[in-house]
Length: 442
Ligand code: FES
Ligand SMILES: [Fe+2]
Image (cartoon, rainbow, N blue to C red; front, side):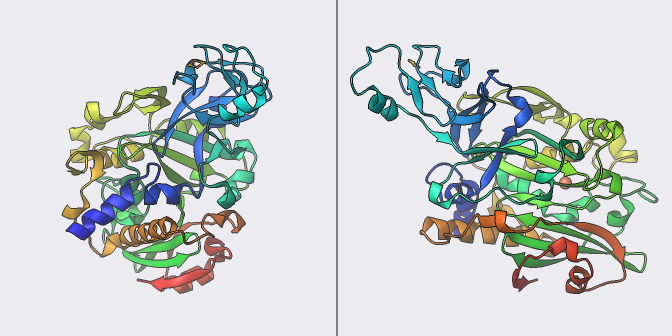
């Protein structure tokens, strides 16, 4: 029990100077959508890995993600004037550029060493890059800064990609664990009468056999279900730290996956991407995605006050804790297994309400779990993340985060007579691309 508690603490705490926080800081993260910030427009308040930040697009179009607070008296820079290539605090006029460099201190008589003074008054400004409709931020040591992850959708034209983000009111780990939990597809996302629907392949067998192959960037795992004399395989890739690459049920959905970016230990920014590798999305497909039945859920832009009262700008789910995720008990009896409308709404409805560690809102008390074989991928991911976090904490593993060098990863879902996972991977090399498999584990 004490060991589980210890592991849970390492797994779920991500603030500055925590082991997992330092591991996360070795990767680029999707901070916000590029479309959320306009040139010289309103800034966006963020908290990432427990740090309060503000994002803005300057006059030249560059995005800055800098400390949320002015170093003079701690005023919130969110209310600042975004003008002439910088954000100017409205309290006494100090000004900062996208890299956090102080450019102006108008409430003093400029001393002889004004440049030095301004340098000393500079604030945090993290490296930012824009790709795939996302503003990416790197918050770790600069000598370990990797290239952006080499995901297939980052180099596609915008009309082939759909990205979104929204608030999840739980620790990041239980959101991420849903990505690598194939068994839950047979239940919470199911239908009462599934015959002839796309859920049929997963609902006939609720106890998939899970096989894991660890890779340089995380792992690839297969969930094998018995299906009409053959097998339905779902093969999912996990890319460190929290990216999933999951297979579509039908081609028109496109490839998709998610990332779980900790806001702090109690809140998470969920990111979803989907893409069509060879064609633009149609208007109907975009409308279908935005309807909220998969990812993203039904959302509206808004503000949210975190536990200590700090306000962030985000996208707020319409089905939420306060309205019981709009569960419909009649539908639960006759139509949907869960009675909840959307796929993320189902997941989030469960993940935000799991038995919490006393005094730690939103974090599962993993001491009370009883894991089974179909939870194997969850267990493997926890172990890998905690091991890596400990290594980074101990000053080892300098190569971490170099995932930009690796080829894009794929995922599949298909019915086949192939029973063996390695045979399946050999038959569908696009799933593995040229990843190296380090360790075979079952
Ligand atoms: S608090 Fe920002 S300039 Fe004074
Ligand atoms: Fe799910």
